[in-house]
Length: 186
Image (tube, helix red, strand yellow):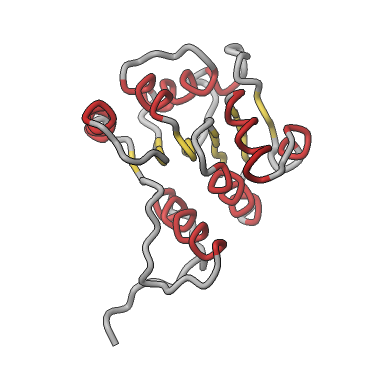
């Protein structure tokens, strides 16, 4: 499986980093694109530099390189996930504004009818954010807000992160054991 992972400057870059770890454990080919603010947030929140992050993926594309392979529909990928996704990026995608490689790759994913998963990480949201999410949802984009459940009784922050990453994997049909599934009240 070949997956494009986008990371923006919204808080929660740990979700994107953990998703990439899981995808690599599943032998997926991972192409990543990170916004400039995404790199800053990742360094601040996770202590991961651009150099260290590049070692985690198969290809790290520069956000300004609109000529990269992932900017073309002829680049075959199985899915694209933007995690976390800022409201700026979400709004750009909703309105067809492909002004960098991340939004261009998302636009291509949509035009090629490939799975696009967006993980917004903002709260509270306003009506503009909701309308943009609704617009994308109507186009077939899977919206997975960074809102973990607690029925699996997390004990650590990693348990909470893995819950959300597991939901993303579920959306791509990737088997995992990242959290205990609900089997009904006992």
